[in-house]
Length: 259
Image (tube, rainbow, N blue to C red):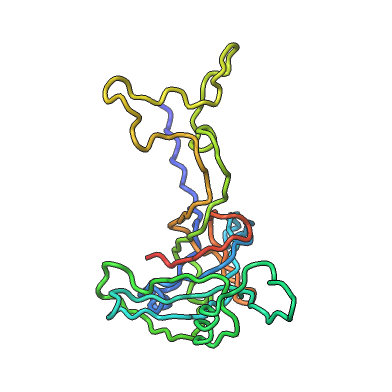
């Protein structure tokens, strides 16, 4: 009787994600929800300590000034209003000169920005919640008008969600809009990319609401959840987030911490 071969020892598993810092390093950050407005620069790849290639989306998030603060005792939730970029201001027109082309900031927005110590209103305004719904033990941080939120509110290994506007693709058919296979491509067939029959028959003798049909595709608000912060570049205000997010290159997004 031949001896059975000895079982091979399993090689050491490769750690997919780098080790997360100690919990004490996150006590001040994981107690509340916070976000920042940024601009999507595109996608690239980085390599972690194990030499693994990681696809990431690069988001440029310049320091966001705080323009308004919502009190939890009054409104039922705690939030702050953040700004990004700089809007164009009106200039005094001389006699006989027409109005300048393009959008200019309104006087009300200019006055709103002056309360935060800004000479010009931001181009983008977004409200970001500081408390997590359903958690009564949460510790809400204190922000004042004129403060600045930077990317240091995040840390490598944090779980975030990114909200952006998807690329607009106009009016599209069901094949591109929903990935429907379409009809046969054989000889004599003329319904290659058409949706086909849409009625459910005699009963109920109508088209059911929500039927997948041709229509406007894209240009909609989309939130991608459970993404991971892979790298932070404090000098250039860059956030490297694992995976893809909605929106074109140069589009504005909001990065939120996700518990």
